[in-house]
Length: 427
Image (tube, rainbow, N blue to C red; front, side, top):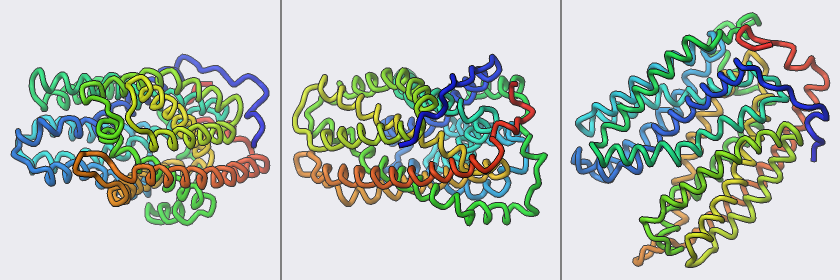
């Protein structure tokens, strides 16, 4: 295990840095909500558009595939512009796509809207990570990632319930239109408040976007990181698609009580995320990742082998399981911020986001062949999917150890990252 990140107290955030964190977290929240809203609204969208389940499945997957393609397309250009301008460009497209979803009146229109939204929304997360890396010192990034990750928790306890309520109170168009209006207001705030993030433009750039993309892909120190991301995403998406069905049919939790589990988990993670971020900065990203992997391993084995249970027990297991998941994701993302050099941060994050999207889709397909549903609705072989998750988790732990060693060795022989401060960074 690595030693604590820094015996000294981590640097405090300035007022401007706190404002940036809040804006970046909202962007993540908006993108996650836009993606996650489709599934719970399916019961309303399908009859409204006379769409079959196969057509609706195509609409849901269209976003992921478009987002995956967009990352590779944008990677060559990701480091050639001011990151703030790049963020606003893709965010504007995302807002237009979200509004288009809210205005769609046919299956074809909604499908086109989801593809358009994915092309722009799929790049935002990578730009957010690049900005967070540029504006914050390595000793601060664990806390930054912790706060940004709370967007996932907030989407569960705020976004999805509110979106469902708006849909049942009016219609399924309203949540998307509401998100577009709120997103537009946030975009104006970002345009006014955020300073340029362009210090990387002062460094030498490669001649063509294609060369930049190829260099990002073949750079040896990137390869292991990309492989780790593939396995990390694969493990995560093995259980997620069937968790609700497993909870209802195998564990015996009433469908009406299912939101309580997500609510409890979301509330807990809003507090856990920042705490994990602080611990990552204080005790080291590898230490926290290994702790998170141990927690996740135990809870996955318990959860996937669980029989009929109570709402309280399932809620507690779910909360602890997500403590383990967050304790892996936050230090993992923190370490990934130190893998690429300054001139490749945008392209590295764009490729990583694409690989995660594609790996998630691939994992869902594999899980669909492993997990079967009986005539009584109960899922079979869900524990086998759990074993796959545990195996990939252990494999990623080994990769994390090697990546962490390489990053530390590189930092020991090169000037510290904090020496380069972009024009938008607070001193």
